[in-house]
Each structure stands twice: as structure tokens, then as C-alpha cells.
Image 1 (cartoon, rainbow, N blue to C red):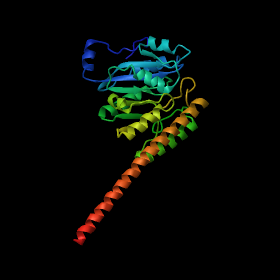
Image 2: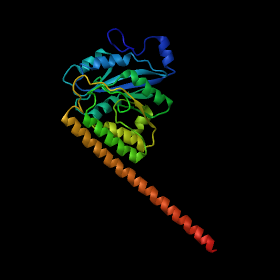
Image 3: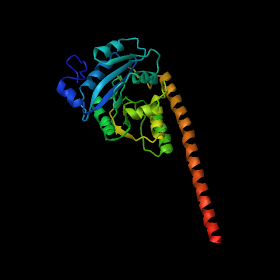
Length: 281
């Protein structure tokens, strides 16, 4: 919860701390670049949320080389601040993740105000039920007019169609609003340092057989310009990385499928030969 000044209160009293000992710990990771206008509201909204069976243990904001007061706003709100001066969405996420010490669930949110954080408990609920990755789907939820660009929708549609073909899933989005089991996240060995972070996570989770579920979420217009979809550089970089990961995992998946088909054909042929041999005798 937050106090009247918008400062996050993680442990209000002894009774609450005792009850929290029996609940799952959520650590919230927020990459932020020049988000002084939106970040205070995001942190206040986050602090006012109540979760069933879990609680926010820590909020970590990674200031990704901001030139405004983003870092100060994070500290004023009571968040843990991490500095990563070299730009890169994945680099900021990795820097924040490196500071996690005690967590059961990791919740990723953006600092631009595009996500309705009152829907975060639905993502957490799915992880508590057993999902290892719960992705907020903007395609399944409501979207404010102008909150999603046409090229953003087209890119998501193309990427998810390829993913669904490869892994026989029915995914609709590569949304950044997501929650994961912390142990599952460590298993993924994330490495992408910029625009490929989101799709790397989704593809690795599916490739490793983790349970992935989508939850409809509301999308709001960002406070200020979008750092990725709202710029040519961001759009081009994200598109290039998405295509690269789709190519790599398509080759890997198709190779696996062909190998399985070959083994099945070989096994069937051997069985037929044994039957024919037995019939002769």
C-alpha cells in the first residue's frame, strides 16, 4: 500500500508481517527511461493493490540512463533503485533482476502508465495456480483508442502466428505486462539486452515446456511517447530482433520435429520388418 504521499509501504505492522510469512513474495521489476511524469503514478497505483495469497516484497526500478528525474522519483516513492546507464530494455531488466534476493514471483511492468495495474492480481493468481508464465494479452483485453499502433498489432499478430504454428499454442500477444514463477525465470537464463527480451522469454518458456497462459488486460495510452513502438529506431530494432528469434527457434523447432519424424518412421519400419520376419518363420 502507499501512504498519502505516495510512498510504498511494504510492511505496515507486525501482524501483517506475520501473515506475509505464509504468503508468496512478489518482486516487481520496472525498467524506466525518462519516466519522471508517469513513474510516481505507476508506483502509487501499484502500492494500492491487494493480492490474495501473495504480497509485494520489493519494487525495483532500473533507471536506464534517464536524463530527467526518474531516479529521484523512484527513491521518493520508496522503491529500490538500480542504475544501468547503457540503454536497452533487456539490459535494464537484467540489471533489476540481478538485485533480486528473495522472491517467489516476479512481476514485470512498464513505467509509462500503459498498464492497468489493478489487473496485476489476475496475473499473480494464475502463477499461484501453477502457471509458470502469465502474459497479459492486450489483444484479448480492452485498448484505449491510440494506445496500440497499427504496426505494433501487425507485428504481434505475425509473431504469435509463427509461435502458434511451432508450438501448437493459441497465443495472441507478446505483452510486457507479465508474471513468472521466479525459479522458472532463472531456468530461462535470459540474455537479450535490448528489444528481444520479451520474445526471448516467451520462446524459451515454450521451448522448455513451461506452462504459459494469457490473461486479458487493458491497455492505456502511455504518459509521454512510447520508447519502442512510438519511434522508428525502437520499431525497427524490435522488428529485427523478433524476426531473428523467430528464425532461430523455427530452425531449432523444425529440426526437432524432423528428428522425431525420422525416429518414428525408422521405428515403424523396424517393427514392420520384425513382423515380416516372424511371419516367414
